[in-house]
Image (cartoon, rainbow, N blue to C red; front, side):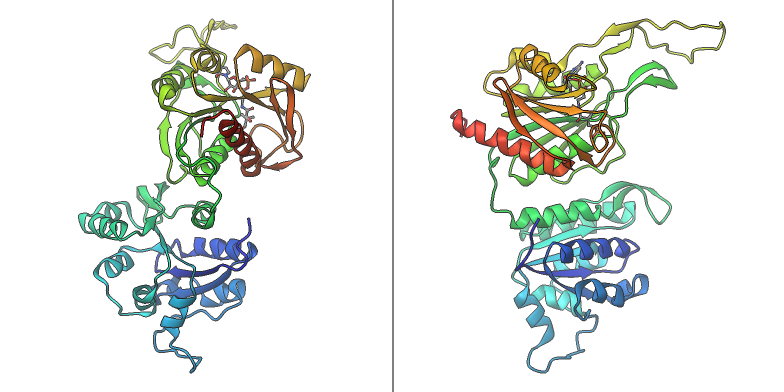
Length: 403
Ligand code: PMT
């Protein structure tokens, strides 16, 4: 990802999540962006300006009246040279100042002068985030064209569990790339992605599942969104943050996933089944905890419906992509799945190879169509695998007249 030639103004306001802005600043600089950082007085209490200065190779501005270069007015100069303004983390206070048009410090004053697009990643306590004043300020800003990256849910620094954690730097970075990305081959398309493993209950405290982390499916969902698609992500349990700008449908069992996919099938243009669906489920889920009694316990399993096969059987205009997790005869097995399940493409991953398959950040895949190999890829990040896959899907949608 190349941000060479792009000037990004990064505003850091005062919250504990300011530490995550360091990673963001580093990623932006590594991608070639010219990053200039403004910190509020409170942000400086959490993180030293020197950290950002070292990463961005620019002096970090904190004071409106610290005019180091007499040839320019610093807040106007910073505002004028920005191709994009990113506020991460954004506190309730900076949101209120932005909504009201206040300019009482360097960041808010510069924001008043900025004409570039603005991306805001809020972070605060869950109750502050839900406060009607904060919601109203965000709504006002949204109406003015400010783009928000929703905070994640989870353990907050204040001790509460809920929504308010700053989105991960990778997510904010992806949104920044997205804002510069002119190539949107999936614009106007609806893409449904399944991800993660399913959970098949044995009793209230035990279940059968597998090692799928959701990384492959989430990367596809994020990339499809970046390529302009409207994305639905149907996900089994995963510890990954929910991708921004994507409709998220959490599911547990294969049967839940089947309903979630089938309900939406008709309106979709592309279906990508990266999930590792359990082939079998316990014939009965015990309503009470199964007791330890005999030396042996036999659990009867029954076959789950094959969601991909049902999609393949019912598809009309949909471009259908299956995954094949194989340990032997990779391409022959994958091609067999493609034909049996009526897929347009199948992504074969040899899950025995290092850097491929379950839980890893990378994957090694061969993408096959009914005529054989469409693309054989080396070890790549799952996001890059997603990009290759979606580009093939987009090209084929166009050539089949789906434009
Ligand atoms: O989530 P990660 O940790 O990133 O790992 C990624 C992955 C290895 C899980 C992913 O890349 C992958 O290979 N997913 C498919 C795993 C799998 O279940 O493969 P399969 O060969 O058993 O199934 C073939 C296809 O049929 C898959 O698209 C699967 O979603 C689908 N299927 C399978 C069974 C079933 N009952 N319903 C289905 O829809």
